[in-house]
Structure formats: structure tokens, C-alpha cells
Length: 264
Image (cartoon, rainbow, N blue to C red; front, side, top):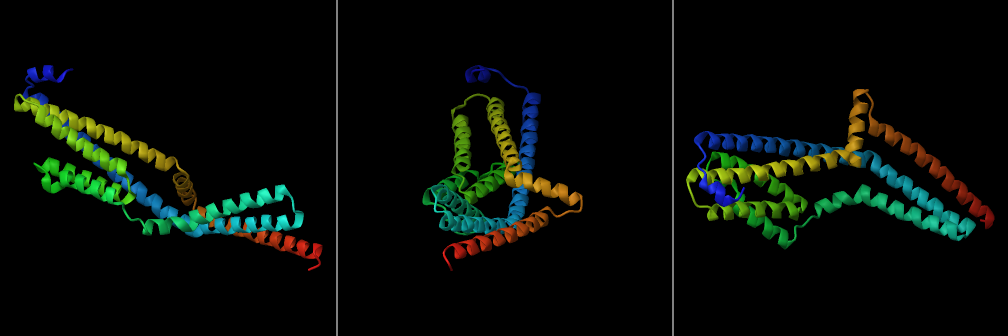
């Protein structure tokens, strides 16, 4: 319905109160989704750290051994296929090593670029709880500021820009509306409900992506194993150590073959 038609109507008090209740409810749901997602992020981050310490480093050792074996096979067979396999296994070993040892260093060395710092300051100037007009808005701004802080720590420019654009859109629309105060508030609350519902959908999509990812699925498997009084990561580590021992024996065998072939 066009804005000019809406402005000609005079909503009664009941309609306005209903919208306020809708806004409160949707903001409560948004806060719950934010809290759930924060807990999931924290759980998966902790689990991923444990996985890398117990399992990831062993995968790196195993892939390095496999690459060394492939490289020794080049000396033994001297063929194009052996060289290709050596290159492929060494690349995979490097990727596994980077996954196991590189991410923690990258996180420690994260230095936000000036553009991200400027964007974050612009957002904070508009949605900091100190700038709220009432208690309800203060609670909402507190939630938005928490989201902005998290986005900043991840270097998430898209989320910060969306927070800034949303605030500008609502303010610009408010300034352009004339008419009875009840109508103005009704329109403002309707827009805020729409933004909150969109944010809920965004958070739900992010949660689904996290849980459907490799670490999310592995975490789910680990929880299932724990209910059966099993430690999945310990089981994986045990299996990998056995594979490493087997790879070490294969490496020593090919080393002996090369020594015999070249009279070493």
C-alpha cells in the first residue's frame, strides 16, 4: 500500500499497541537467535581447537609421510606419473599442514584495515546503547552493538555495512514522514519489524551453514559418540597413529629398495 494512502488513515490505539507487541516479540526472538548462534560458534571453535590438537596435527604428519614416500618413488621409478603423484601429495600435505598449524597464527595476527575501523566507528556512533531514546531501544541497540563487535572481530564488512544502512534507512524515512504521531510510529515500528525478521532469517541461515559444515557434522558425530561413552577424537587419533606407523614402514622399505638399486 502506498505511503501516502497509509498516512491518510488513523490507526487506533489497539493497532499501535499490537504493533509494539509484535516488535517486542520479534526482537526477543532475534536476541534468542543471536544468543544461540553465539553459543554454537563458541562450541564449534572450542571443538575445532581440540580436533586440530588431537587429530589435525596427525593428519599433517601422515600426509607429510605420504608426500615423502611419493618423492622417494620418483627416485625409484623416474616416471612422469611418479612425479605428478609426488607433486599432488606434497601439495595436499602443505594444505593439511596449513589447516593444522596456520589458522591459529592468522587469528592472532588479525589487524583490521583502516576501512573496517572507520566503518565500525560509523556504526557505533549510531547504534551505541548510550544513544537510545528509551529502554526498549537501549536493549535493541545493545543487541546490535554486540553483533557489530562480533562482525568487527571477524572482519565482516558486509554485516557492519548492513547495520549502518538499516539505521540510515529508518532515520531517513522517519524524517520524511509527516502526519499524526501514531501513524509515524506505526510506520517506524513496521519497518523495524521487517528488519528484525530479515535478521532472524540471516542468523538462521548462518546457523544452518555452521552445523552443516565439516566441523559442525564432526561435532554432531562426537556428541553422538559421547552418549555411547566413546571419545570420537581419541578414536580418530588412534587410527591415524596406526596409519602413520604403517606409512613409516613403507617409507623405510622404499628407502631400502632405493639403497639396494643404487648400491647404497
